[in-house]
Image (cartoon, rainbow, N blue to C red):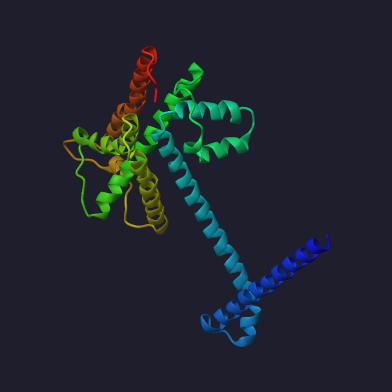
Amino acid sequence: MSSEAEKKEALLKGANATLMVSLSVVIVWLYVYNLVVHKMNPVLGFFKILDGINDLVLGMVTVVIIGVGIVFVFTLTNLFTQTITNLYSVRLLEDLFRDHLFKKQYKSFFKGLLTFNELPKPDSPFPRYTSSALLVFAYHYLISWFYLVVFSECLWFAAWSAGVYLDLYPSTMGIVPIFAIAVPFTARLMAYFDYPYADDYAAFIPGILFVVVLLLAFVAYMGGPFQYFVQDIYNRSEPGFFKEGALFWKFLKDGLMIAFYPVFGEVVFFYLQYMKLKKGEDLD
């Protein structure tokens, strides 16, 4: 026991010394900062140290909020990507919700989401309940809309950054959402065909979203001369061709069908799996 107490006392002594040195570094740095940057006299600079600590705390809070937002966006897009490339995602999501979330096992539920690709593979990709299949189809449709809107913004931002003006008309409005939905749906197709580099391709999607969303947020915060894709197509008009708002509504109408493509892909996938199961073949 004495050795344990001595070890704890030594650890506390080292921690206390480190804490004192850390506080001293902060105080000295703020004092020198006031003298050099704000050009205060030594007495005023000393009493203004508390103001500097307040600025440090507020600055750190701002950085932490931005950091939490970045982690949230990256985690969400990474989870979406994992569910796209995992052919058992329907059953895995059902198991997570029914076996953990509905039983209020929140820690296990969120841990499963964060380590989705590491979850044990179930014996079947089919959900246990019909309601689960409907919910997962709705999930894929919502994800499709998310990617359709966000990647449309990404394409728009990329074109704007390169100085390319997209002269859109109602007859060509479907091009942007089709390209937007093709990016994530390609990852799903790769998974369907057991393409060996499906995970490598999908790993780029969160990175693309992370960078572009961060840039868009920065542009919005700085008030830069930039119009978002949805905003631009809502405001754009061409006398004699289409009126204001026509492009926006055409985008939504096209999106209703285009966002359903991945859902239809799931239907085809389940049909093929059903036929394999009926013939007695291995589902892997």
